[in-house]
Image (cartoon, rainbow, N blue to C red; front, side, top):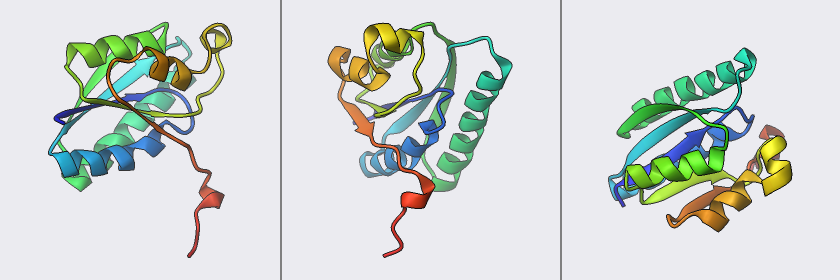
Length: 137
């Protein structure tokens, strides 16, 4: 494994996949491709994507993981992610299992389901956790 694609969108949970992907990248000496996906023209939503990228950069730098960043405007997050992953010959795509609902999801099904059903590349689907669910054991 040499390339992991991490699509970062405007969902609240998108950043939770970064620690998991970082561990996998370190274990397999892989590069992470941060794919910042802008699926709307709303400035507030695009700022959320930008903030996720900034936090991901800091986390990956601190962890010593190699990464690159690609910005992408996309109407369909699934198709755009899969196309990008194929272009960079990715070995893994890391996503969250639950994404915010939008018009495409109503017609095509949840993002995670679309990704798993249509990807020829392995997909790591991570269940989001709420901060208050973290165990204190």
